[in-house]
Length: 155
Image 1: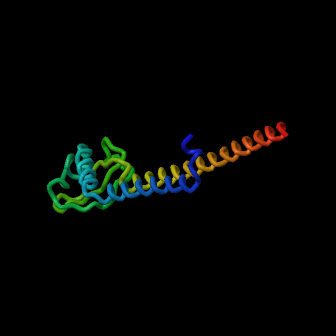
Image 2: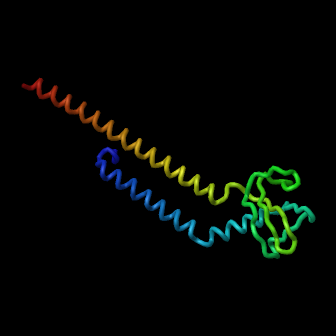
């Protein structure tokens, strides 16, 4: 096997290198403006069944200035959520308070899941490295015993 011939230093450097590349890619993705544009598009497309206290399908955030009062959260009021389990509370400048359906997970939970995944992959890599080193030592001991037996039988 290729991994058995590598030293511990090389394996650790490989793990650190791959982790660094993953981190750079993640930073690049989260800092790009295309991600925020994509999320706005998804939120707009997913908001077909928005309900307001006054209007049944008020999509004021598409045509008015607005502020998000509450980010995407689990819907508890039947009036707010018609076909969604998560809603966003939005206040439009002219129309007033309205609710917009949204999809969980948000970017924050995606980030949390990403770091959880990266941490678990690091733990798995360290465990794998330990198992490989343990097996390598066992193999080396077995080989040394076999060589010692051969030397004893010749002499």
